[in-house]
Amino acid sequence: TEECQSHHRHLEWSQSGHPLVLKAIKKIEAHFHNSLSFATERGALFSEEKPYPEYIYSWERLHHGNGAFALRWLLVNVHPASFYKGTIEERLSGARLDLVRNVRAVDARLSDCMALSAIVCFALVFVGALALACISSLVTQPLKTVVKDMRSVARFDLDNIDALLHKGETESRRGNSFWSACKVHEVAVIREAFADMAKGLRSFSRYMDPYVVQVLVQSRQEAKLGVAKADVTIFFSDIANFTGLAESVEPARLLAVLSEYLDKMSAIIMKHDGVIGEFIGDAIMAWWNVPWELDGCHTAAGLITALEQQQRLSELRQKWCQQGLPEFHARMGLVRGTVLAGNIGSTSRMKYGLVGDS
Image 1 (spheres, rainbow, N blue to C red):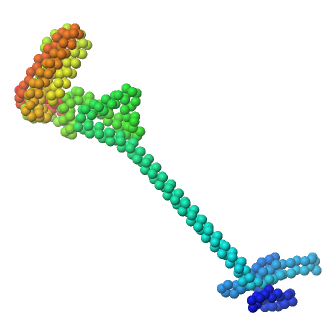
Image 2 (image 1 turned 90 degrees about the vertical axis):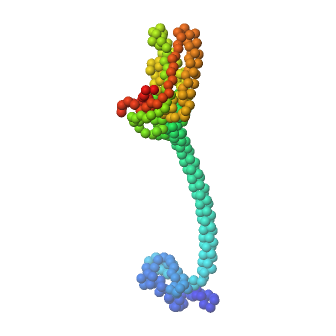
């Protein structure tokens, strides 16, 4: 068929010399190296008009019979491209609609994925922050406790140190480690080491007056030999006829009585801000106004201490007599004067004491 003046005209086989048909045959021959014998069974080509082709050339081979009388036909059809325009435009329009729908679907899916990703990211951040807060709490809370206890030791706050050690002993009696509540091993090790240090300092304070130890710790300096003049009130006491009493009482019972006596007397001295210098057998040496000053009332504190000790000893003596023990009496003396107070001894072994005529 040939498009001509808005209508179609059918060309018979005898009219194959029409220029449009010849042009189509030449196009097909050129495509197959100028020989129709190489043409495929069927196919189609576009005409060469620019920018858009005006015709579509299609062909198909037909075979009939065999041998010398076989017939071989090559049917060539020429169709104007506008013949397919409506179908192509419909398909393109449908393709565009499908593309728009697919793009919208992809956009919707992408929006859903982005929203889901945002929710997942927020959840992960929240969970991570919560986990970090928990881990931080596990680490910082025990460390804060350690820092608080260390500051108590730095001040040599005996009340806090005793409370700390008492809590540890209570947990130990229950069969649990005092530091087992700490989930971080390294922090637990630090707390254990600190507890051991606190025990050592507390034990050290029992060999020396705790107030002297407190001054030594708070000074943050290494102990050195040295003395300075000081106005002090000095206290001495001992048990009268202690040698005879020691010979008449069993050693175990004598040690129990002596320990109770020294414990009660020491508590009274410390109650009135006195410093226990040393125990010499049954004798006690103590003083007031060093290593820190007590204004002018330190002599009165010494007198009050001696009176309270005599009262307490009277109560102990009555109890011991009921237990079949002999009577215990104590001799006490006070003196006030200027002495040299400080660290005395050698560079490797020293103690805090007093030197002077007083």
